[in-house]
Amino acid sequence: MRIAVAGGTGVVGRYAVEAARGAGHDVVVLSRSAGADVITGVGLVDALRGADALIDVTNTTTLSAAKAIRFFETATRNLLAAEEAVGVGHHVALSIVGIDGIDASYYAGKLAQERAVSVGAVPFTVARAAQFHEFAGQLLSGMSGPVAVMPKVLMRPVAAREVGAHLVRVASGAAVGRARDLVGPRDEVLVDLARRQLAFDGVRRRVLGVRLPGVYGKGLASGSLRGGADALQGEITFDTWLGSGDHVPRV
Image (tube, rainbow, N blue to C red):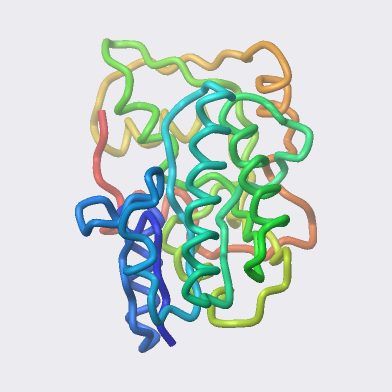
């Protein structure tokens, strides 16, 4: 089948592309560099012609609820309109486990995305996954100085590689509305992951954990982001991932 991947050059997208090609699918990567822009809608119809399914792993980096909502609603509307125009039969949206009670900050955007997909005309599946092993490094790379400050997050992180493969399996099947959640193999705390990653990379840097205020901070520290007992479970632990070729040292 022909699978389109929106955001196919990103953290999860590149693994979804790799997994799809490895499974023998024909893959088209939607990106601005390839002339397909999810925010303006330019190039989407042409890029999606002949596609059977679309995996949406587009992303934005913001803690502003308004900006996150605007991005995900706009991208979703444009993708759905293009899919409907050319007859794409399955829209798969990546979201995050346990965010139902955290309608704030970045998660407000993901919930808005889920709502937009659910009222669209294209058959859909929302596939929620836990935060990625890559998350700690992403935060560390955005901070400078000898001290890094991490929010208190109780999580069950999963490798982005496993998320990408999961999304391809979901896209290969029928639209079901909501796929089983995907989480990692072990409960973790974000500040511990950051410390272990720095130690593995040989970086001397102090990491402090803080409890963020408001609904967002409460949600991060609540444990809801670890998902439920019925979730699918990945196999790659954080420490195994650190020692793999997928880990790129970040300071």
